[in-house]
Length: 137
Image (tube, rainbow, N blue to C red):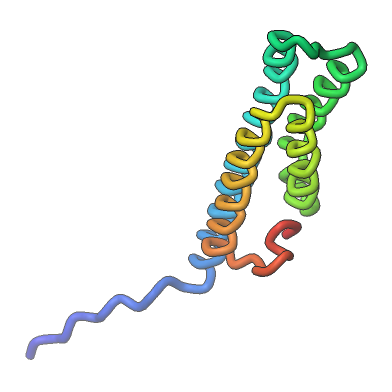
């Protein structure tokens, strides 16, 4: 008599949990990379403004350097449960930098679009809440 082959069942709950954990780590790493790239672009703002006739004072320069450092530190803090919320809040001052140089509005919009795309991807892969809670969880 021939035996019927056993059909493989779907992934076990443990496998789903392991996949979600890997996806969570991967998306947090992508978000950290976005924050570090934002910091790099913020550090290029003084160079762009120096080419204009308006110039950039010492206070604004140190503010930009300090904000770049905060972005890098926030990239490391994405391991914490509140790290994504911190990174989402830091997207607002990124747009405010556009007041000093209008071209940075476009760059900030691109980075915020990437940030939201990765958060949406994380929501689909990991199963985090939707709506506005996507920005903090």
